[in-house]
Image (cartoon, rainbow, N blue to C red; front, side):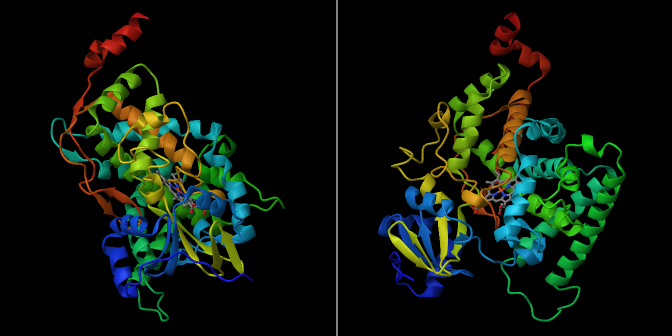
Length: 448
Ligand code: HEM
């Protein structure tokens, strides 16, 4: 075992550091980075003394390290999402689940979900008011919730309606419980834990009905939803996924994928209204059937407004040599997505919103990291990017988004994800078919 070599950090009392991390986390990260450079120690509530890193070489090394040496932290997530959740398993169990659940989120499979996404976007946007400012976050939340329930859970009819009513409250309560100490005694059914168990029983009953219906579906093998794929998939030893595994993982996919995607979409609206030249080019591109600038715009929204600001690992080996540091067993490491994305040596003029950074080149896997990295990289990354692309395409096709001179919206933490503080406010005008036909780009296209 090697002696630990850890970066410097502030000598402020633990509770002061913890208080600052809670009250002003992003400000604190910026200040510590200015003072100590790309790596420093800080006291984080719940996790204790953490090493924060944002040097791309060190981040790359950490992400490439085997999960047997550094993996996610053991937090209360298993109690909230279930013991089979991605966020509660490690080692072989995690590798086996990744192998089984990666295919539904890639390549050809993804295209099958496009229609559902467009349908949900059109349905939600049909109620948008014209010429009056409104927050887009809630509508985006409804779109991404319905998309996951249909594309991932394969829900329809009564089950879809029940899950739609149950899940937002259940996930909200669960995300609060993660941060609380686990009670040693049963606090009764009206306690937050009691309510959480009651929600879970209701949820499991709906999932049982969905599974039973799918098992009786003679066309199960033609279905594209993730539940249908889960039921047909087999581990290497030929065993199917158990009912508990399916139930926990569906809930995990929803919790991880719903709010992250909708808050990013609300940020896209917020950024685009403040960058009219990009907005104009995007509308022209959408009318001409292109997507290159839109894809680059999504990358730049995620760089400048990463909704998850950090990802955590814990050293599992007796020690870990990481760049300049030797970290002892149990050391918590926080990869600051926020800091690396605003590093001017990686992204010149980093605060400028400029999608053209990515129009001709893909971002580096270890410098552009809104989805984390390595064995734990977000399994739904390609799904989320495709979903955001289709929602924005629909918005640009059906509406004119009005620019604004107002200051950018502040970052507001919703617990898990950062959203625009005013909910990504928009003013839109509906583009009628005739208006779209009168558009110079559409006319030129028609003539061609
Ligand atoms: C813009 C949208 C999204 C963002 C910003 C995002 C971000 C992240 C991040 C930062 C992680 C942790 C990675 C790490 O520790 O290195 C993660 C993990 C995960 N995400 Fe996403 N995510 C998004 C959408 C989705 C979607 C749509 C799904 C599924 C439908 C999903 C499912 C998951 C799962 C299951 C994990 C855990 C993976 C594991 O532990 O192996 N995410 N995501």
